[in-house]
Image (cartoon, rainbow, N blue to C red; front, side, top):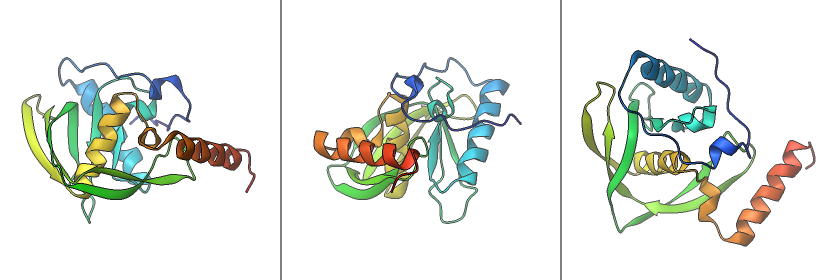
Length: 168
């Protein structure tokens, strides 16, 4: 297994829409396996390939109370989002040390190419829905803090910059 590392903000790969995956191959399955290993080594519920510098529309999500329920998604797209919203404190290993409360739909229906190369549809609710929306944002070149007001986003980025320089 290749050792992949998280790319730091503001890497350009984090701001560009990722490329669609044409088919599920052994190389794609290896990338997913690497992503799962990185996700499980950190305190998170999902990971997008772009976070590792791989510009492909691949994501993994596991919001289960016990690990091992991971869902592998390729080319995910939200078909339906609930009108009921949910607040969750979100963060990203690409910008460590900071987080923000983001309001997202409580449930989403997502269409994606699954690990067998078959189009699938799945309804995600609660933390699963938050995580899958967070990963799809990454695949679209967005970060969670893009959902904040300009002032709050600026404050968060300044705080992250200070932390990266070892200042309190």
